[in-house]
Amino acid sequence: MASRSIERVGTPGPDRGELLAWAGVLVGPTMWAAQLYVDWAMGEILACSPASGADGEILGVPVATFAALVNGVLLGLTVASGVLAFLRLRTVRRRDDISPGHRATWLPIAGVMTSVLFSIVIAMSYVVVLLVHGCRA
Image (tube, rainbow, N blue to C red):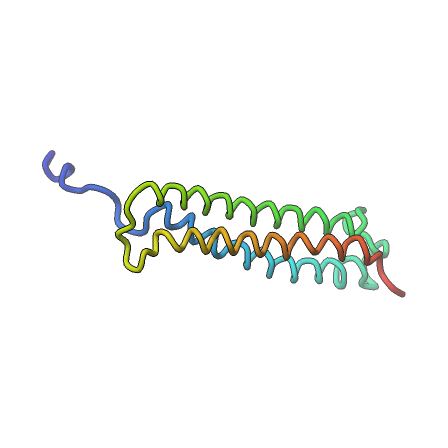
């Protein structure tokens, strides 16, 4: 019985580091899509609908402030995924890449590039928050 436990080395499934690299690739676009939908829903449905309490407010907070907070959380998640992909890239470069097509190297690079791109896109939404004020009658 002891020899069986010695023979089983590792766990089946993808490497944890590979999942971090995939997170770097996928989190940015997902957060941007969430930002587009949530910002639209906050402005058009929640804050400016005739059934809402005060025009231009969500839970007593101005819609621009609420949108800035949500965008900050989404931007933070995108930056964090890029940092994790960068850390994975540093780990992979310390050893030889024997993965098919050098996937272990290019996947974290793609994750860092995607995170940088979508961080810029999400950060640009603060321009909209500064320029668009409240609800129109």
